[in-house]
Image (cartoon, rainbow, N blue to C red):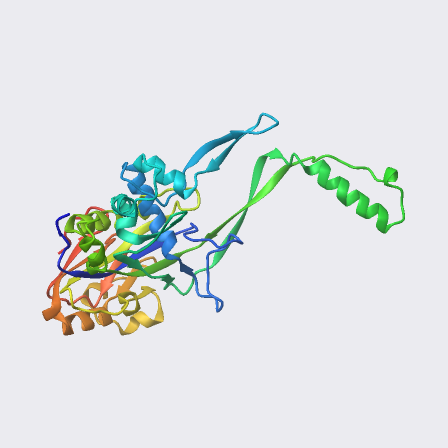
Length: 357
């Protein structure tokens, strides 16, 4: 295959807002947090809506859950189960021979999620690990007043196993009170069941990412891919800007793309995690009193979000000779950017993609 690898690196930030939504829950149902209580979203939470969007567009996506009917059981039941990795591979590529490693690698590199994020393909006779060109870090919430909100939800149905559960409780009660089990009345459920929905009142996640096309150099030399191309990058960029907003499940309604930075640099330029160089606050916050920005002087609405770019601007201005371009996307209807004096940057409305002057 011809080498079409793009000759640049890309560093950036992807910002996700969550208003009465649950962007990334842990196994308890609450927003995921570190041991010291800092709320964050994993890279998987950001990648999944992107993969789902590509899948809906009928692009090849390997690492996504897909279902199939299982074999009929002895009792005649047929279950609905997730496909194995091998079954998913066979579904996408129409091949079940995993002995030809070059062919498997070539197929894997045509899957859009593998091309971006890499893969671990561990199947009998074919154990492959691919480091992705796109690496996304953990997205920490930068809004200090985030709280979890728990709502009770009434189901329209009773618990089908309520009587069975009550029987267990009745036996335990009879034993504890030295009573015969016949003396304890076992009742079926008299009401429908209760469920729980957990959301954040408001959270703002900022993810760092980096794109290094040279990570596929060896695979290009092996002739299994043309490399990470400009077309691949534009596909990632397009999806990264809208996929969270598009992914409107029950828990993700209220979660939207609200901010993004794309910094294109020379291929030998190295930048730190850029998400550490922006801050988020509300206009009424004490820390905003020291912001010297004429665009913010007349803002008195506590619901206006303020993203301060001062530290980001400083580091990018100092490295301007190694930077090809900077694009910053934000929601101008809800957000103001503070200290955005970056001469070579272009600013865009993240909803309309139109340039903001």
